[in-house]
Length: 277
Image 1 (tube, helix red, strand yellow):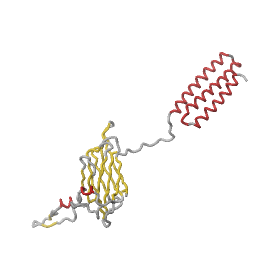
Image 2 (cartoon, one colour; image 1 turned 120 degrees about the vertical axis):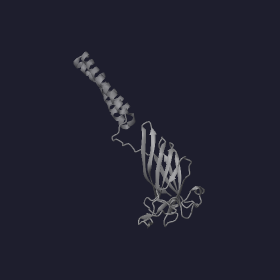
Image 3 (cartoon, rainbow, N blue to C red; image 1 turned 90 degrees about the vertical axis):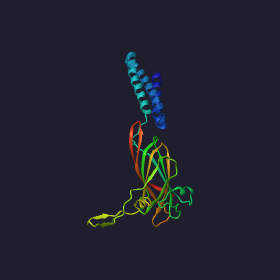
Image 4 (cartoon, rainbow, N blue to C red; image 1 turned 135 degrees about the vertical axis):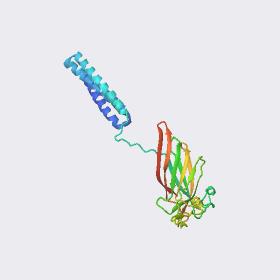
């Protein structure tokens, strides 16, 4: 067997190895390309020996130069292509989640932190009527949130639920709680004067009624919530007809602002979270 024949057989074996290796070791594709390239070079060497006998040395060297250059270029391109990760499908960008929200019902009686919750009637926490719901608000961004303005509602799916009081358990500065606008009961009391005109009489104690009332939702305002910071709230929830029953879900809606190198971003929050028991 001549040297050319031996080179051809060895090249065929190396080519098969180069094809099989990427199938067995997908993360080592470059090894397969190298083996395939060596096999191809050996195959070209066999071809040169055959051409040398048929065409002469000069033409054989020319063929070797052309084929070898083309092969080296193909191998180099293949190694570069195989090292780049490819995906068969384009993964859509996930929406930015600025806040992580969690609600937990605490059924243990006489927890000491309940004493610091101002209630609608200015009386201590009623253990027989109020349910203790803890709401955790976490800034999930690596940027501070500014002008965080959230509406916290307990009536999602249950119009008989309400909030008798709310307070912060953490020490985030500037946090404020606001009740929704007070709806003046209708019809208003109207009297006709001596001039024949009708006049609305003011409702006595309107400011007292506005301040001392159970509401369906509270607005929480925070001027600045630092990156990864947490606000923990305690809600005294109440249910008409079912004492000490917590709401099944909370609805959180609102807005916030972030400042980054990309500019000012006005974000929106709209989530419904289940109350864990």
